[in-house]
Image (cartoon, rainbow, N blue to C red):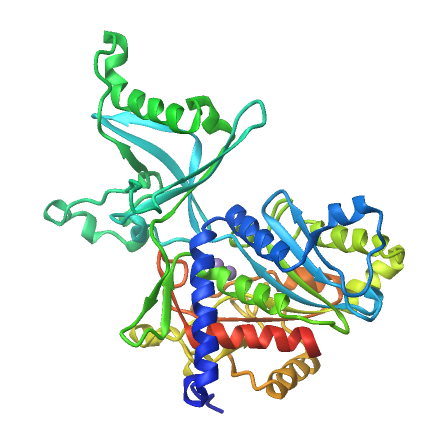
Length: 463
Ligand code: MN
Ligand code: MN
């Protein structure tokens, strides 16, 4: 039951579309390095494609009807898009779900300090990271600082050619004898992931201030450039991410290397599929969540009521709301919970079971279940539903494969699937295979990106 490499069947037209999709995707990765930036960029693209916000629609007093394209955003970090179908919402929706948060280093609330004429920002990592991967590489700062008067100051440093970057040091190899003996989990300690941001002291300070002259200089720069004070770090969300743009990877340009592909590769291809829908029969929906990497918690994670509340608002706007109708709309829906899969890596073959692994270039991956230690925490899609989904993919010539995340008892992971399934809807995990998942530069196959978009569109049309 080996699945074929998708590249082998591509026509010239396929290759053209594949390159277009990959290029748009790379630009999206560059525009969206944080969940907030992703939402902002996708709202921009959705509005350009005729989507209006739910609030605006409601304020207009118009009834929501078939053909309407509507989006809703929660706290600037979670969003849902709907293309209203010909059937009543009560019959259920076809939903594409993915997440737009990615592993990174978050700047602490009281982060700034100086030590031996060097100024640093202290961080706390977010999501699962191999800490040793985050040292000795160019880093950028993305995020917001919110002042007491409510002004939101956007920060993005490290991406433009003329920008400086920031940096985390590692110990030179010459002195690392002891460090090199440590376990990989301890080689770089979490508290040592401090961002080097300055080394130049301010001149002519009073004696009592001389001890922190580098910090004082950095504060002056922050004041000048962003009009923020040290206290404003208290109400800031600053994320440290790898600096630089996503790139074509491989001499044959068959892959994309870039930060945050878990899970923006599924988020963006879902979004693209959504944008291509015309006159859907069932309502099409694309749900992009935050906080997946830390358990889908909080008001912007999948565990929140954001999605349910948004669908309720939508139904009220259509004149169709009742508690029962809402429950039916949710339980009769079906969903692709789209998250990345572990791409088979020959260098680490011992962690994979070859028959049930996801391979780069063999198309979108269906994971009937995820979880670890005996499927714990998994959704485990129904066989009847898996059959339906594979028929849809086959009918639309989508290259797909099935996989588990690694060998039994080697590890595991979870997604948003089991949370959506609580409504009683059919859900299956699907997504794109990634190499070096959760590292600063992850790698995906352009063929898989292309097949994911095709798969998502097929699902919205026919699931
Ligand atoms: Mn993920
Ligand atoms: Mn992840």
